[in-house]
Length: 333
Image (cartoon, rainbow, N blue to C red; front, side):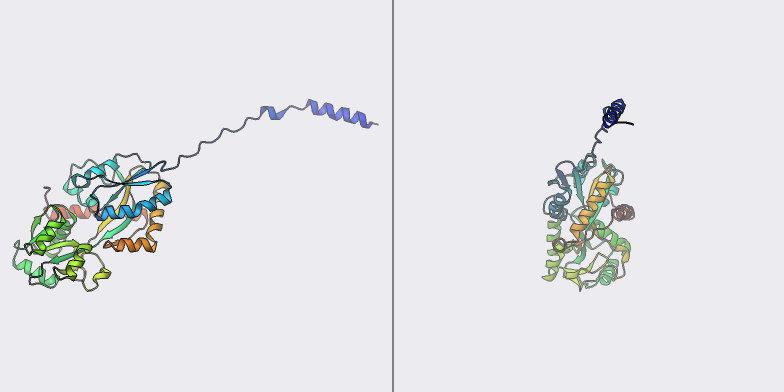
């Protein structure tokens, strides 16, 4: 029989003979945490001057980007060469989310006119989110004896290449929009390029030119005061504040329907999860009533939508304006 003392001696010896396992266990090395993007302040490049639609949208958006990306955002008006300088700066930026681009018409209209661009709008960028569409108005000076698009087309056909129209310059959105309309209507007007919108509008008001395509925000007060006559809006739907003005499609020229796409871009190579995060954040911001009101007040239509839809729209617009440049025989300055 085993006594209690003997049992304790046996169990103690057995325990002493067991290997000390804990001495051979090695802790797992700490796994490196993925680097959060963007990891630092963000520069939102606007390649045009302050006060433009692109600039206004960027300054409305900047606080929201700070909110959902957790980094301070600085708007940088990096202008020059019709938007090329600022756009090229972003194209050469690191794909870390710290350099973004707000672009408008130049992004899809300039490439066919500038074959030596130092960047490729498809290869060098990732479209992140469509923010707003710019609406325009086909307007004429009030002494012109026309009140409808049909009458304007009839007059232009009766006086081929005799009526002058103005634009802020060769290859600008108003110029390209008018060329698109001329192609759809089968008419020929004489283009007078100006150095900016203001002098072109002054000559329209002074009745030195017959017609012009104007942003809604510019056309609305001039039309209301009788200084111009608004014939049609270029978008696919009537503008709420101009419910009495038909669309070009309603006038019979659906092929001339167009808007200016304003959107946010990043350099190619951005991480897919960052692309998705930016797209989702901007869409949430665009859904806020105060955001929509602020954008509508600029004569723009807030849009948003999936990143893939925006990328497809950019490619479609690039193809469309390349055809306009070719068929309209537009030449670089």
